[in-house]
Amino acid sequence: MRFGLASSFVSACVARIFREAVDGKGLKEILKGLNQEGIAGPRGKGWIKTTIHNILCNEAYTGALVWGKSSVKKLVPVRVDNAWTAIIDKETFERVQTILRGRSFKSMHPQRVASQYLLSGLTRCGHCGKALVGQDAKGGKFTYYVCGTLLKKGSGSCPSRYVNSQKFERLVIDKIKEHILTEENLSELVRMVNEEMDACASDCKKRLDIVQEEMADVNQRLDRLYDAIETGKLNLDDLSQRIKQLKERKERLEAQKWELEWQLKERRVELADLETITRYVKNLRNLLDESSIAERKSFIRSFVREIEVTRDNVLLKYTIPMKIEG
Image 1 (cartoon, rainbow, N blue to C red):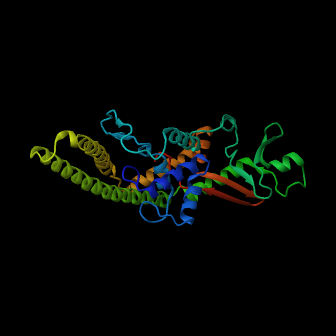
Image 2: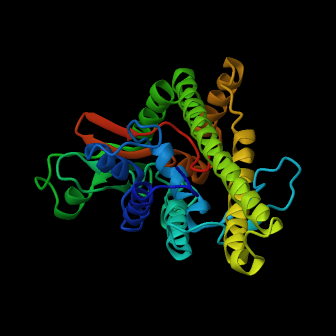
């Protein structure tokens, strides 16, 4: 669940996710801990990164109702603070958003942007664990990636060796095109997102049914109180406080109903056709060859986590390319 009628267990789970994010844990590390402890996700199954990310980006946990953020007419969103009991304070929520933005591929250290080495900051020596450093030779005529230990302490300090930067970068790009930027991978990604959105829609519908049942109950209670006043069984002074409480509860439920109905309307995600996927894959591949080095660096860092080099072997650790806001 994302807001409103969350149980104490769900509230504790959401609070834990935010707390671990503030402590510096990544999405994968958070979901791994939840899954290892056997804590069920929103669908009663295991946790996935998309669900964790959606929770961390959902302002509803601060008690805020924001409706119309995805309006096709570009209307100003409607916002109601303190619409329900907050699970996360606003300061914590903003800290988490800052952390997530900092992990986006749009954020990069200026020195790495300026570097002529495409893979600087990503490569690591598989022997000693030190980062590979860009190194020029003969006035820049030759360029290499060199283990930091070997560069600093000299021959014999590490069994790694100098790696020709142009050949190495070309190899990595070719392998990215061959194994990562494929129609099959991107089609699978769209399928996974579509499946997740369908699950969210199902959960949303269940919560909407609960809200509507509670609204019907509140309306019945108000009707009985009004009847008691009209028939003279009870006077208004005795019931005014209770009527006020029920009206406030009704307003909160109406706000939740409004938000849930909008979410259901927005859950219209369809699997992209083969032509769209093919065009997208082509664009991503072209980005690796035709863009500026800064743009290529940013793109590669959006999904490549680390490149480990052990003499003749290269291990590339990655995720499927997808912008964090996607």
